[in-house]
Image (cartoon, rainbow, N blue to C red; front, side, top):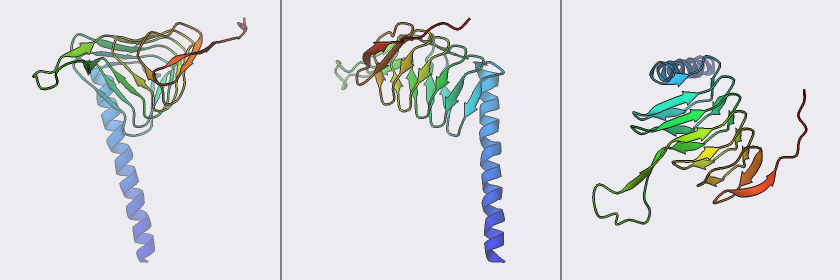
Length: 171
């Protein structure tokens, strides 16, 4: 009997968690420019900041990911993008080469643009001011500090060109 009650209690808690995250994601859809076909693919996804966040049609973002858009900056994720779990995208960050004792700490900021049909691997950090060209891939655990041209595969810390894509267009 006690095992049955515990099982129902766990199911109830899981249901409440799902309802909670659905409500959070609905709020994101109201606050930011989220296409109807965009999918929040997991829990603990955080969008924040007073800037502009645009999430494209047929794209998704994985659980435990964060997108930050500071005031005056924007993050745009194109159509058909695959953003894996635990990805961090920021439009503002502290300048490492500054005296951190002086407040406010100097920061760098810039728009982030992820072109159509990109794949961003798990645990990737995308820094402020970065553009990732369409149909590009960023390998897992990479740190993107500069622009990535279209149709290329990048990876590492900092991310570097691994190779250009070799594919034939299907018409």
